[in-house]
Length: 272
Image (cartoon, rainbow, N blue to C red):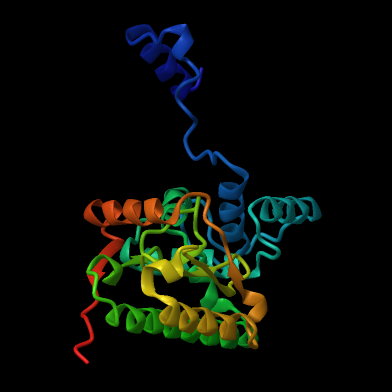
């Protein structure tokens, strides 16, 4: 009888576990999902073993492992794993510098909890980076335009805006949204996809002209039409809401009181 088996027998005799609970305890160093296994594989393929040691002994994947990796990537929404693999290795090495005894298994949940598609953009092609830069400029221009519209309005409620930042919170379940800018009459959002490319979505309150008047309403619609018919038109989409706009805005206002990544501001009224 080995030492471990002897210990287990003594442990079960002294501290018996009810039969219905015997399968509750997961084995140590066991990945729970195919994606977690993929992270572990990426590390191993780049010379990082389960103990977190960085070696020159890269583990080259078999054909079956490559096919499994591609299948997992497709299920997770990735068309390629090139950017993800680079990110996994980069983040592990960076964390390893601060935590010398970090091992691969400990790294996996930390990586998942802090993951955001935005992190992939540092490895994107020059073409994708150029497109992302243009879209970010578009997004910032739309934000400033909406603030200028607000500055012309008398009612304080209509000058309220909510700025949301999702890039710092990280979430494997919803890693696409980067920022959102919301007013009572229009909203715009900046997204980053698993391809490491940006896109913009927007929505205009159906009661736009009732809220801000015919003249400003026409100006706003014209500005948005210029964006959606310009060179980046394929990456700027109208996304309808599944609820009334006023209720949606009120919900975000409540979020701004309890969620640090939702911040409410009042735009100053133009004195002219």
